[in-house]
Length: 231
Length: 231
DNA sequence: CGAAATATTGAATCAACTCAATCAGCGTGG
DNA sequence: CCACGCTGATTGAGTTGATTCAATATTTCG
Image 1: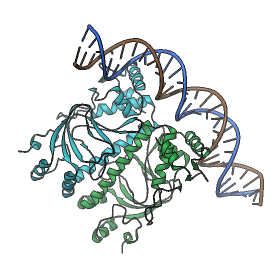
Image 2 (image 1 turned 60 degrees about the vertical axis):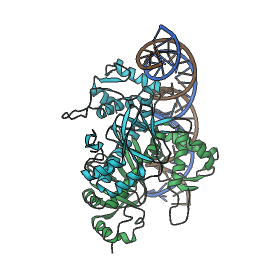
Image 3 (image 1 turned 90 degrees about the vertical axis):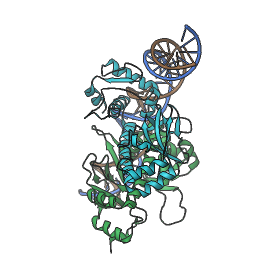
Image 4 (image 1 turned 90 degrees about the horizontal axis):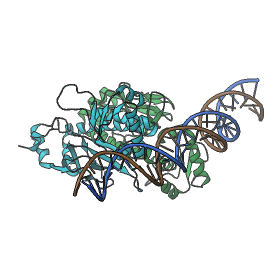
């Protein structure tokens, strides 16, 4: 019995659609590992040695300048695929935001396996195309939106992505949720400073648009107002 | 004889690697068309009805806000693939910057053909992964770089991508080139205003870093200085 | 040539940043 | 248990880089 049989993302990750012999083969190549909050898994510009599926937890993808400025260029949730297949180096670092569990493959093994399994490559292609769409929408935010618009867009995005996507029917966006980000990390997602993020949060709170019961918790009181602010 | 036999991007586009019967089949599905400078080919949020290979010319991929702000999220050169396969809607508009020639497929036809030809899907996957890398690098620019850094990075990027990639050996980055962008379009790539772009260009000229013989022409006089400025 | 579009330059404003101080939450150890 | 220190977040004051608004210059094209 392979560990995949009990994998909680078995039917959502790129493994979905593989038949039992294929899963068995893939299973022998992969191994599970945990990554503690704050711990890196992949380094920017390093040789691309491994790829992985996220089983549990949240990780950030970042790029940095020589002088230490950071931009979060992506966020990986359970069932997401991380790492750079079919390429020599990884363009982004991957660091866990929360304690996480991932299913890791050597890139070489994965590349070989993928080339032999078109269905898997197709899943990966669909995922990559979606991620590119999402990334391009974020470029609009970074290049053209004001700080209030950025914050509103961010909160709505979080509300969608942190929606309780368990097995319940039509969950819809979450009204209240816990951010996997510190204020600094929110700033690194939005291309702002921590002070600006803090001020915008305070503004939204005093305007009664959101409630902030704790540092990481958000409750959306007026979604319509947020959508209006998002621009 | 199919038009592909004489196609100048035959060996660089995703068609590369297909054998003759496959090319013949693909060829019957595609048709060539020209797109004049300024003419749109695909509209944001519209149903994704067509995909295409760029044969000649340059096109921009853009997203816009309701109130008309625009962000250029990608630029397509000859041999690049444009459009959104395997998805209902297109996340970006595609508009020609110069007169262009493209090889157009109905998305449905292309999707079906691609699913039957893993080698083609693999090529598309590699391209999409590279484009995602490039896009993420651009997010760093949009979120964290200053106007002078943005302009310097932009000019170096143009110098690389507009390098004479004919058949000559090891061309290297272009020392002088013609921008396919107006000042407004440069602003839309970098998330700046046209005035800021103009001021930065003037600054680089008066500092002797570049020469600007005409509105669209750039000659890099001091590449080292540009690299330093790029941050 | 003249008109229209595009680009540059200048002056003034403002949004977001920097720098600095205070505050809140939290775990530790006396 | 609570004082202490540490980290992260908030708030304030002042600055600045990029914008906006406005005027002028240049190029393009009918």
